[in-house]
Length: 234
Image (tube, rainbow, N blue to C red; front, top):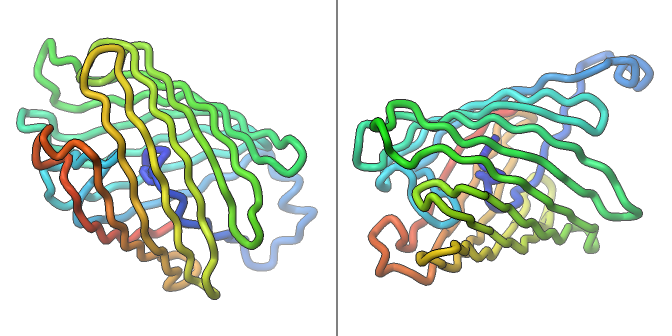
């Protein structure tokens, strides 16, 4: 999972629909579940506008299981918080119903960290409610993430986001998102991103994205940055 984002995002970058050669629609309908995989690299790992790798490159990968409208998966990436933490490993599950033209997504995500110092306030659970509707050839969406014990804050946190995507031409789409991270204590900030994704083929997607926040005073990892990533999905 690219951090519901990605990701990620947190921005919508468009999806590639893949099908097995020679398989009929009836065969696909009879499958109780499907597995998909993804692996990739990026010039930086940015989550909600904040670098998770001290502005260094990222390598990531994940596995997803879908069974009807239910899904579950895991995703991992290197991280650098200035301590001994080496990697992030996420686990998630959810349900994707539809309501009229709206596609909904209700899920839970666990963020875990490998090598975190003993007693460090790392690792947390978030609950997600998201939805999107068609807007011409594109889509508009919104999401809310709630954590009762937020990473690095040890208190309640809520992240709100509005996003949209639009296919410009065949294989090329643009997308953007604006979000607000709030805490029960201090540390609130607003973040946004805008970028374009290009499908090199049925497996590889190249994404170029600009990220920023309104709180550069929090440190360089909150500063503006352009990130390029290459992701393979199969």
